[in-house]
Length: 570
Image (cartoon, rainbow, N blue to C red; front, side):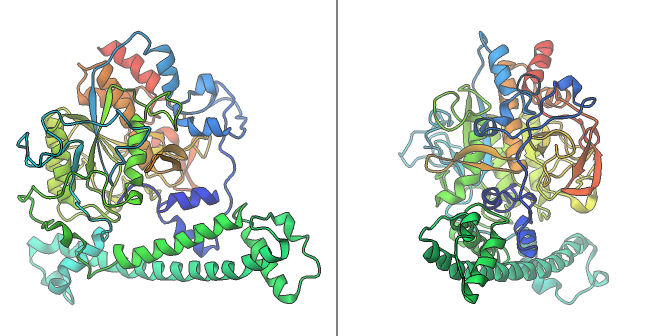
């Protein structure tokens, strides 16, 4: 599952405050959440963050679009000091090419802001239908698509039920052979979650449909009375002597204006919410469908490795939104007058590896995707996805160790449920800790998400955290980047924090090529900014901890400081 809060683009459009992974369900349950206050502009120097009261003001649109690249000291915005690095450190320096593999939902490799930034396999001849480099993948010019034409998929806990229901239904743990006890416990947990999630999705779908139905009745009546489509709340007061029916319409629309400034836009959001919950019920929670049939692959046979195709975009544009956004954060062309600037410059090339469907990824696909990236020269791999059940974690663990053996850094999203990953009950996959404590590889970096606000709201309210299981935090709220067909959007999630960090890692590997993957990981963790201020955890104001205690490093990624430290170690 892509690690972006579910349908964040809906909540971004409505400026909703709470954007953890179940945000839409919460929104419908409370008849939509409260409006978000403007992003903050910190107006004190970095050295005074913990000792001075913070003045805040709203970010301008240009500041918001690039906040993750700004510098706290020079811009008073808590970004990663990317622009400062380019201005003060990089002039006169040259770097080497570094390949970053983006394992994701697909990438629009023809996007205007990604031209010249996509990796091309030098050993493959495009379009000849042959496996020129003998790696088993025909015409893998810019990467590989391990999903073929698969778009939607079940969540992993649904697949567990589907796979084992005939074997485990009606049985108890005492009757299960020792070799199957672990998967039986997963099955029991999955059953309980399935019943809860399906009931919740059905309830939310009904609530959204009711809101949509009332909007389709009230909005046209208001439009007819006012003579315009996009009216304001103040305009409602100009309707004189409303009938009883019109009073009902006015009351409903007035209530909706608590959550939006545009009723037409709000109607689109609600319709997309209906579509979203319908998709959950018909695909993600569908126990009978076989979405993988079109691929012709057995996801539980790791020895069968040659499947998929070379269409790294995927079957449709919307499915590639997440991956395209991630790729742009890392490497969108800088200073070309289009869209936005990626963290990395033209030394960095993006290898597109499609392995994340609209649903949960298969362990087999992820394991093979990591190995593909390593074998084809990637030095950094971005993994902005995750799930809370895994049937074959050992395949992914072996791939992670394979990456470490080959000096490849994996930059991984922590997840968006606002949970402590140090709690074994919240174990997320992929990870690099067999026992939730001891790392099996030293080249795996897990990233939590920051908001553009200092003080108690510094942590993104959806971000997972953990002193043992999250390494460092990076910008992940309201990140502006590339989306398919030459468009750009704000998205938020640890999915965005990971590529911000991956961009920094790639640049370090480009300009300091003698540094190992582990050394780059340690530089990123040791060179960040920190604060001992108390921060809200998981969006719950009753639950707080000091920022420097909610990750292993206690720090925020800072590119400028990372380059300074790398300079000392080169």
